[in-house]
Image (tube, rainbow, N blue to C red; front, side, top):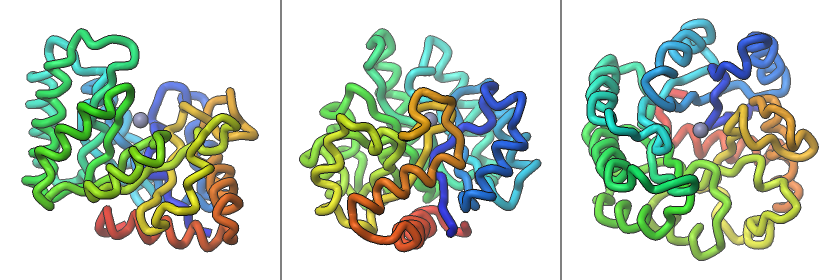
Length: 256
Ligand SMILES: [Zn+2]
């Protein structure tokens, strides 16, 4: 089996004691490629370090996560724009909007998001988009910016059928993770009618571990539980789901 974890933060400090073991467990489980989205200025170095250590099974993205958009976001963005010039990044992420905890930096989040969408267009790179408590505002910006030049993943998608359709119509893929395996997740009800060619898998490790590991620290190896659950819902063999979703990622991110 060849699975791709399209969103994982294995470089996070929560893996400081067993990072190499976690990487090995992922490879042993069939998670042969891991896409690493950046979070803020402080995560660039550990992310690159992990990528240097595992160049064949990791790829890096560059971006400022919306919850980390603060007073100094313009300086952080100019540092990241410089980073992107190195040409080693396969995507722009994770970027987006998040008004879950507070909306103090709402206008800054809009500005940072739009700036980074423009980078993706200019560089022809796919996106990893984070959206929480911001669906309407997200769609408004994406509708404004989509001119055929934007593609990518709505990471950790857990919305309604209507919301899924809006993102699909905008040309995006849906990143399904651990939440899909939770009892109360409504996605299960309409998952079978979604186009399989627009679905990709992710863990968002160390967060949101799938059942039966819910509550534990998440890690890329646990992607197999999410894959199995989705395959069960779709009533297809997990190998078939792995093949389809891996192909989807390879069309989005070139050279994987
Ligand atoms: Zn993330």
